[in-house]
Length: 124
Image 1 (cartoon, rainbow, N blue to C red):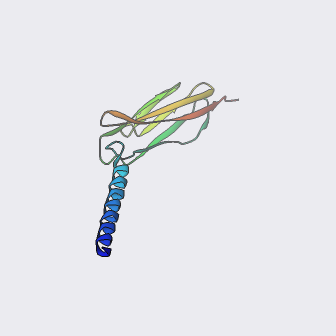
Image 2: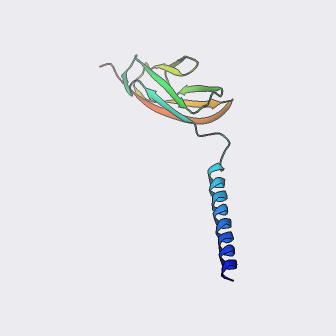
Image 3: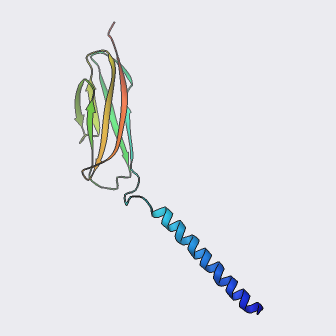
């Protein structure tokens, strides 16, 4: 009887451990099929004088060779891009605080969106 108890106890313990392993595998694989993608905007400065240009670099990570591009918009100023959209330059002629937005697109779908504010001071 004692041997039977040990076998039953060992079998139950094995099933519990297998169940725990399965649950942890489930929780680690939940979510989307895509790994997390990093995206950040790095302005050369956050404060400029009217008439100057700020350069903003888009930094991405974990796009894993997929077709990634950055789409830009700004609340004011003249926006140009370089290096396949990885760098944006915005010239602001009027004083104020403006927002520059970057949208990371992977395989044609929006994955992340970031923004940065730029303060433009008057010349005087």
